[in-house]
Length: 102
Image (cartoon, rainbow, N blue to C red; front, side, top):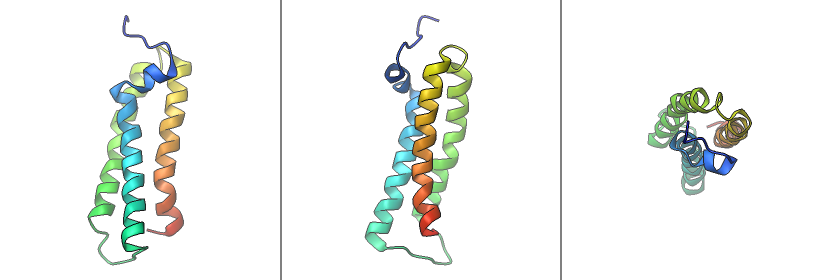
């Protein structure tokens, strides 16, 4: 266990912590960019942006599970802080979809 991070920042730079965060932020930026470019569009076909958003959000689940399994037993307090940040980013990506009814 010599790779044990001692700070929240060090833990958040691990790929299993950073990847879900980056995926949520990418999903958020895609939705905001689409709304800024095309407006709120309600069509029969969801479109590529919606499908990529779904893949980004669903793809986080295995990475989050790995992160929790790997780091929670070793550094529980730091892991919970980073997990809170990851959940906040996911909720931020979900918010425009929910509130705009996309």
